[in-house]
Length: 295
Ligand SMILES: C[S@@+](CC[C@H](N)C(=O)[O-])C[C@H]1O[C@@H](n2cnc3c(N)ncnc32)[C@H](O)[C@@H]1O
Image 1 (tube, helix red, strand yellow):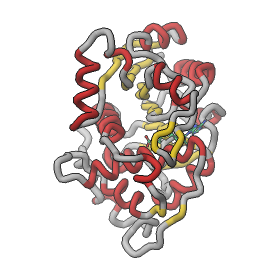
Image 2 (cartoon, rainbow, N blue to C red):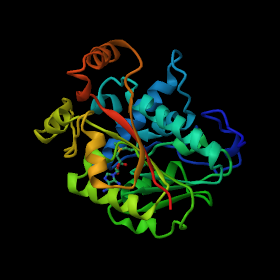
Image 3 (tube, rainbow, N blue to C red):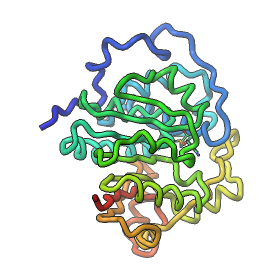
């Protein structure tokens, strides 16, 4: 049995060198733009959820990082609804269950931005590889410095050299949280096939947006008067996911489509109504959990 550390624990990092975002440090100005700027949106949602007294989402590092960046989060992204935190918590659970079976396993988080998932699920033994664009990794290093067990690669995830260093047969869990929708459909397909062929036995978790939302972003929809969402070219409806992925790869063992959503208020009520109706439930975002066949 692996020791499971309570989520949000700082204990194992108490001896870590001082990182930006700790009390008294000057705030960093973000010069991220385009798709990398979206990592501030998901960070903000998690930090706001973690600050709430009525939430059990525990994420002190997201709060620290959010407080350490000089950026108009609310002006850009509007009122957070907690759905990104719910998505992250759902993946945390998948990871913690997997780590019970593979306490020394390798988690690869593609397009990880400023996600603090490694800190939330750390069992003190696992290894973690973050792959993101160089500008994103540069900012991540300021707040979440790499170390022996937590490594960073600054690269486009589509340059699949990040797979070269993975030992054949090692237990691997690949996360692509808030990533695939920003890629062209052919690129998602190519990347998924590469993972399926080169990492047999791996588990993969990623989220998808429905096609109507993808199309809205291609029209240039504004999230707030100050922030236009970047294009999200890959959308897939809930009832199409399994057929699409199985058409891409015959190495898929199990595949689960999991619901997640805003934890409260109008956003939750609206999603619940969509979910209750078989005609509309496919138009919601979903999480996908795939287990690839082994050797
Ligand atoms: C919406 S953010 C999600 C960040 C993080 N996974 C989370 O949930 O908080 C999208 C992330 O994907 C990264 N990204 C987008 N396209 C990428 C690519 N082709 N290669 C590597 N990273 C990419 C961005 O830099 C950004 O960090």
